[in-house]
Length: 166
Image 1 (cartoon, rainbow, N blue to C red):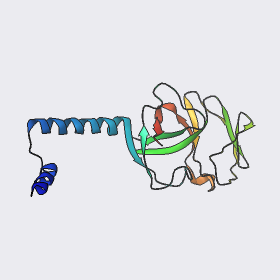
Image 2: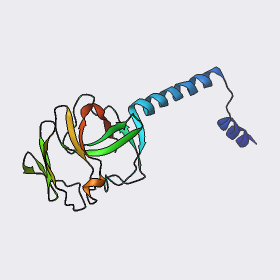
Image 3: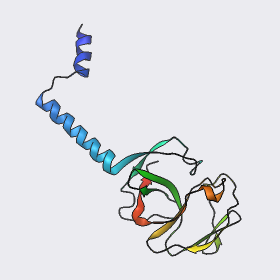
Image 4: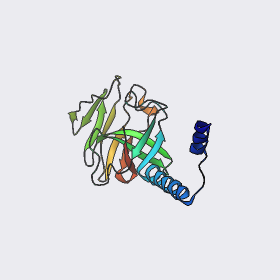
């Protein structure tokens, strides 16, 4: 009987002022953490495979680029429209760099880049283009599908929300 009472009290506590204050503090902390610091997002699509798979859930660490800019090779969360629709992409070129694809090879300022995170071969060809100041060039990791089926390109640093937590 005492065990049933303890279980009942655990799931249905009495609404004392202390309980209400604690519940309010927990709700406020959850709102601040998961609404402004670690925003959850759901990965839809295969553009970042094999590193990030379709259907996975991750968190966007919004403070990641508070005091620095993204580096080449960083995976970033980009605001596509509003803050609800985001893209997960890898930074391949930084501002004022020239980026191009030649027969499946990424060239930055005319030098071929190693991309150890790629698993599938691809044959993209894209003429050279310069990344504007205040922007980066982003591409997904899964380049085995035709270039026309990907969302990629130059994006402003102001559209980068942060980086995935893991």
